[in-house]
Length: 229
View (tube, helix red, strand yellow):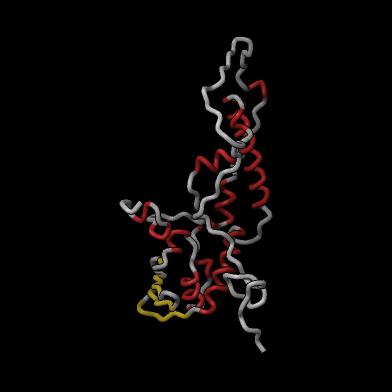
């Protein structure tokens, strides 16, 4: 790994945008999604995948019609989260569109290029807490700095084309009498076979928030902050 460039294995140096999605292996995720259909004959496997995609497209299309916000719900939750994180930060203007935001460590935010030296804005595609500090200081809204890929309109366009049913008359006829299916040459491993994929350690988990002091990183049981008078 040390002989490879950081952009090949470090999320903060990734040259493109992940738009909030991070997976270590797309094939593993797909196999977990179709784990029941993997053991069927190939034609039935394809038909099962078609049904799952048809059902998924319908459910997401119907769910999106109930949204009343401009951006998808996960983005709205992200905006609330970074607004809370940015309340304790301050920024100073350096030149047009460029600010120095005081955090640990101090970072630079460029509103014109929509970049931050913490790299979160470039990789995720959503403003980070440093950018939120600058945007709030300019009396502007975060919605003006969010990519249109996160909008509800774009989400609905992705699922605007339904997958139509295929009656049995349109499916190819298979002659079962002349078909000979031989078992594959495999070796049986020890233990019960795994059916669920191993989650990646790179996937960010939900950060703990204490209900007593309202700080992140611990819960009420392990809170050591003094009680205010």
